Image 1 (spheres, rainbow, N blue to C red):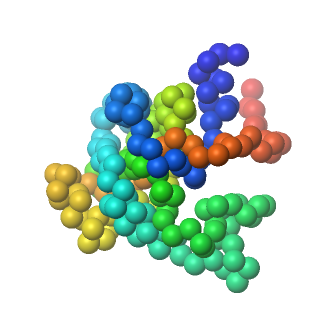
Image 2 (cartoon, rainbow, N blue to C red; image 1 turned 135 degrees about the vertical axis):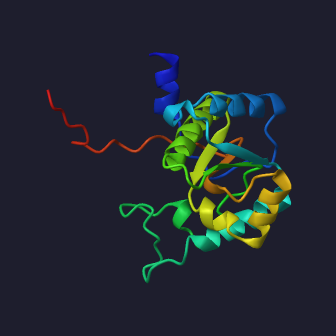
Length: 194
């Protein structure tokens, strides 16, 4: 099978990480993959904020987790209605799952395709990471996370202006434990018009 296709089909979302920081050369390759992602009009709108400070990642992760809200009366957030996932576990206090590297993608607030551009960058980076043996998790609620006192301070310190909004947080690290196998794919998800 083609190496790229194999990487896409084998990739898993990882929510358990070793504390070991990813290597600098691997981080640079992941960032490079993000820089070469397709963006609307070739505008290259996303800005990446890399954080490898465990204390800051923990604080931001807690803000992110709080934005997730509380479970329903059955204790489920319904990330998946068919099975309970670690994302639904209220004992998890950080939405970043202890990942040693968290990269937040920002896009201009007045750019119509900012979310799409950030998603394209995130996919490239996640696939590049997986090919290097590094796990990743795409985490929503970036807007809420950076609409906090800490988030606004970090943006200011990094030189990211108010004309940008956080759109996606990505966790990266070496997987801890078994990465699992893919669930069977649901049927009838592909339709054709010929």
